[in-house]
Length: 491
Image (cartoon, rainbow, N blue to C red; front, top):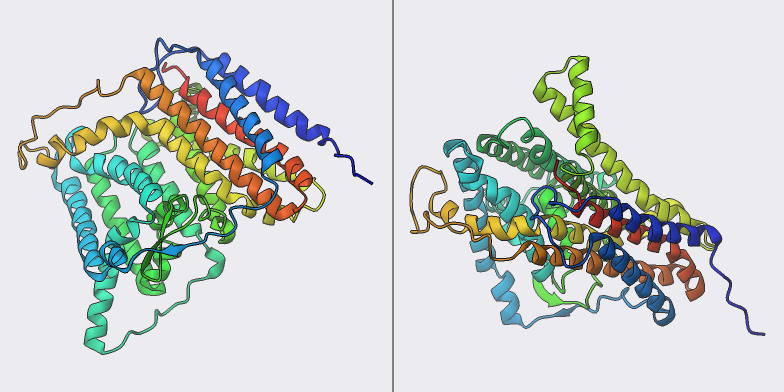
C-alpha cells in the first residue's frame, strides 16, 4: 500500500513562515540611506530595499522546493579528487615554489612590522594597515576560494619554522620529535581565539575614540603574534600547529574547502564542486570558527547602523559608572560583540534544535557539527557583501601609492606615489547588486549543502526535507539580517 506523504510539523512551517514575513518586514522598517562601515551608499536604488528582501527570501524558498523534489540522495559526500599532471603539481607546489612563496611571505611580514613601527602614524598612508586588514584579511579569502589553500605556501611563520627545522636537522643529523603532543581536545579552538583577538584589535581596540588603529599597534601585534606562534610550533611541531592552532592558517583553509583545488601529499588535484566542505566540522572548534566569522562581520556591519544606539547607550552607562573614555568604548564594544556572536550562534542552534525534533535525528551536538560546513558559504557571502567596496577601492591604494611609499615619508619607489583611487570604478547601485547577489548565492549554496547533509543523515527524502524546514528558516533569517544591515543608515 502506498504510504501517504506526511505534512511537515506545524512548528517548522511556523518558523519558516515567520522568517519569510518578519525578515523582509524588518528591512522594510529601516530608512533607506547610506550603508554602514566600509560600504558605499546606495541612494536612488532602482528597486526598494524591502523588495530585495522579499525577492531573496523567495529565491531561497523556490530553491528549497527544487532541492526537496530533485535532490533525493547524497551527491556531495564523495570528493572524487583527481591529481593534476606531475609538471603542474611541481610548478604549483614543488620545493622551489614552496621556498619562493615562503620567502615572499616572510619578507611581507617583515615589511608589515617595519612599516608599522617606523612608518607614518597616519593609518591611510601606512602600508601595514591596508595590507593587513584588506589585502591579507580579505584578499586571501578570495584566493582561497578560487585556488585552494594558497596561504599554506605563503605562510611566513610556517616558512620560518620549516627553515629553522631544516637547519637543526642538518646540524643534528636527525629530526627530534616535538616536546609536547598537541591536545586533540583543543581542536581548532586556539585559532578561534586568535581570530576573535584579531578582529577585536581592528574593530574595538583601535577605532571609535581615536583616528583609527595606529600602525605602531599593528607592528607590535604582528611581533607578539609571531612570538606566540613560534613558541607553539616549537612545542607542538610546525605542521601540527599550522594545521590546528595557527589562526590564519585554519581560517583561510576553512574557505579553501569551497575550492575545486586541493593539495594532497604534495600533489595538486581537483575535486568536485563543494565536496571539500562536508568534512569541515569534524574537528572541535570548527563550528565556532565559522559562526565567529559570521558574527564579527555582522557586528562590524551593524556598528554604524542597527547597533549604533545600543553601543552609545552602553558607552554612556560605562562612563556613568566611572570608566574613562577609551576603556568605556572598548568595554561597550566588547559587550556588544559578544552579544552579536551569541545571537548568531543562537540562530544557528534554533535550526539545529528544530531538526533534532525530526524522527531519526542524531544527538544535538553531533547534529550541530554535521551542519557546520553549511555556514561557510554564508560567512563568505557576508564578507563579500560587507567589504566588497572597501576591497575594490583600498586595493587600488595598496598597489599604487602605498606600495611606492610604504612608510608614508614621501618616497616614490615605483613611480605610483601620486596615483589616486578611482571611486567611479563602480557605482553605488552596482555595489548594492553585488552585495545582494553575494547574499543570495551564498545562502542558496548553504541550503544545498544542508539538504545534501540531511539526505545523508536521514536517508528517507521526506524526513530529510522535513528537517530542512528549520534550516530554510535559518537561511532566510541570515539573508534578511544581511540585507537589514546593508540598508542601515549612518547617524
